[in-house]
Length: 246
Image (cartoon, rainbow, N blue to C red; front, side, top):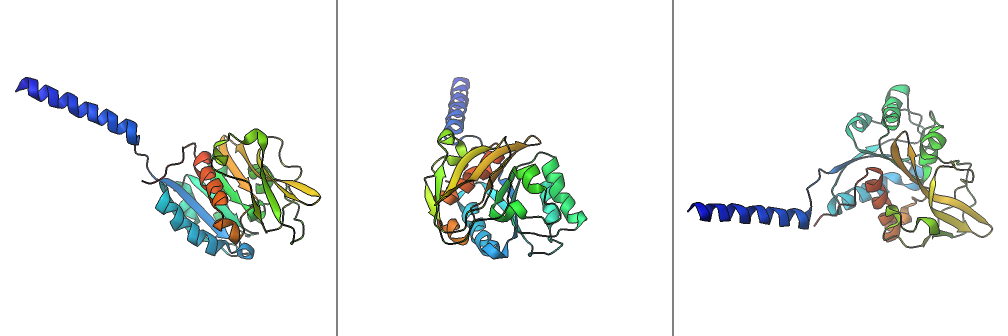
């Protein structure tokens, strides 16, 4: 009986080891706080659809907060204090000092940041966010009309954020970001006739990983490569591999 019991214990341990190797350790859901407030690009609608899509496919738990262009508050912004990744898609929000303090606290603590399109001018009361945190140099955009070719940077082809991402096009105006911070790792450029601009990049700010892309129009969210780019960025900034649900 003793030998049988020992044999069962060894078998159980062996099974445990195999299971760990096959499935890997279970990680807690990555907590993502989405700040929406870019009416010009329908961020509420886009993130309202992207959030459940993301949660259904990946090991994430999202909090989606809504603001309004030029407003001075964002109800629930205290959630940032307990979140892993701050996901910013706002435009010229005039946050008062108290709510803005939660944003600054997150950034100053070196916690992950992901920014889309108008995140470069998300906070009218903290315009330095673009250069200081995102590493950008937003100075407007080219006129609407030309289709922008999204070209992946050759030197960054092996970057985890670009895994599974293919070149694609976007119909939204190309942002001017020439003169972005010297320490950005360029991931993709946007090309229209006569102009090429940095379009997506990664960097480190205060010890925390940051990703920004000037993409983010409603139709971009329907593009598989764009969605893959954003998913990869969310996990990369948190220093975690992409964790798909079975």
